[in-house]
Amino acid sequence: MKNTEDVIRRASEWASCGERGISSEAIWAVMMGVPADKIDASTPADAGDFNRCATLIEIIPEWKTRLPEVAALFPIWTGIVEHWDDLYKALLNLRSARAIMKTRRWKIQNDAHLRFEQLLDLCQED
Image (tube, rainbow, N blue to C red; front, top):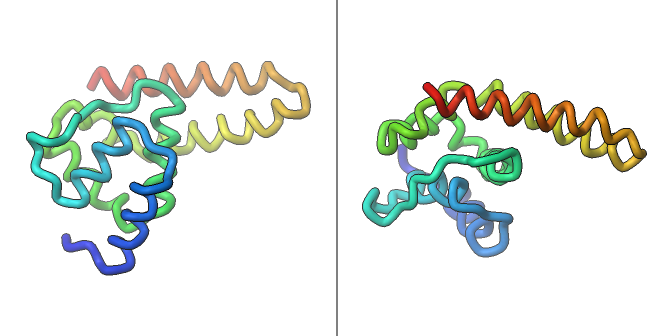
């Protein structure tokens, strides 16, 4: 699928000033058509990494349906892509828990973080 002018603009803005990590850059590179041999295909290693990936997809939601392209190019991504919605829901819970943590309810945040990390581990075993 070809990127529209608007998608290219948002992708360029993200690349120049977005919060990035290796795994989110891998998604960006695949979607922008960078040759596979120029891409570090690292998957998200923790909630922070997945958050950066999810934020990219929030900025460019058109790419969500294209995530299987990442897995097709880099099979190590298959579990992450297949369970994206579950990981995203867990991330939203973690984000909420972090907001609650600011009111000193740290146990909720720690439990949500542990659940997210366990789900991420399961997805990477596929």
